Length: 77
Image (cartoon, rainbow, N blue to C red):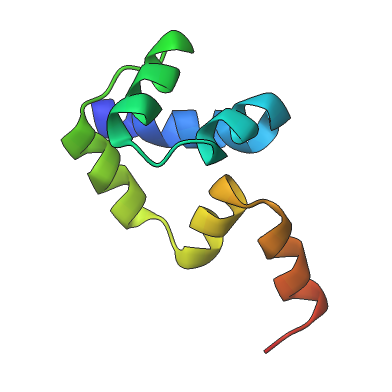
């Protein structure tokens, strides 16, 4: 269930520019979890890792570097 909460948090991040900025500003998993908890999403570091493992490279880029996804669609490789 908590992995589901992590996935819900990722969806919320995609929709919130300020939250995206906060997430990009840190690479510490504990800080990610603290930010998520402050937003009402509770999960552990292991559950975070599991949820991240389920995302494709494109989804990760869209989550943590939103400009990448659009460029890939404009310039196919």
